[in-house]
Amino acid sequence: MSDTHFGFKTVDEREKARMVRGVFDSVASRYDVMNDVMSMGLHRVWKAYTIAVSGAREGQQVLDIAAGTGDLTQQFARKVGPTGLVVHTDINEAMLRTGRDRLLDAGMSLPAACCDAEKLPFPDARFDIVSVAFGLRNMTHKDAALAEMARVLRPGGKLLVLEFSQVAAPLRKVYDWYSFKVLPRMGQLIAGDAQSYQYLAESIRMHPPQAELKRMMKTAGFGHVDVHNLSAGVVALHVGLKC
Image (cartoon, rainbow, N blue to C red):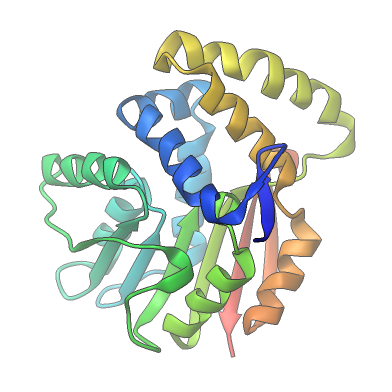
C-alpha cells in the first residue's frame, strides 16, 4: 500500500480517485456558477489566453483532458473547425454528462470518453494538442499522467496545462484567507457543499509550484516548457513541446 494526499489528508492512493470523484459528483451541477463566482469571472480570461497560446488551427486533432463542463472543448472545436477533431474526456461521469449537455446546447456533437488520464485509451502520436485545465492537481500520479499526455502527442505537438499555482509572495496571506475562509462559505451558499471547496483550496496548496511542474514536464518528454504566470501566479499556464 502507498499513501498520497487528498488535500491536506494522507490517504491510501487506491482511494484517492474515488474521493476526488465524490467531490466532483457533488459540485457538477453548480460547477460553472461557482467558477464564475470564486474567480470573479477571471477563469474565462485564463481559458481564452490558453486557447490563444495553443495556436489551434483548422484541421488539427485535440484531446481535452479533465474537460469537465467543456469550456475549452467548445473553444477548441471552433478553432479546428469541421475538418478537425476535439475529444472531450473526464474521469468523472457526472462532469462529463454536464459537459456533453452544454456542448449539445451549443450545437456541438463531439466524441467523449470517460477515462483516466494516467491510462489514456488512445494510440501513440494521435493528437496535435493536448490540454488539461484545473485537473492535473487532482491526479494521483501526476508523472504518469504527464507521460501519457506526451505519449499521445505527435512529435512537435503541444501540451497546455492550466492550473492553480503558487501566488506571488506579497499576496499569499490575503489569498490564504480567501481560500480557507471565504471559498468554503461560498461553496456552502451556492453549491450546498463547503467540504468540497475546502478540499479544492487544500489541493491547490499541495500541487507542485511552477518550477517543479516545469521539471516534471521535461522529465515526461517535453523538450521545451514555457511558464506563463497569470493573475500574479494564482494560475499558471505551462506549455510543453514534445521532442
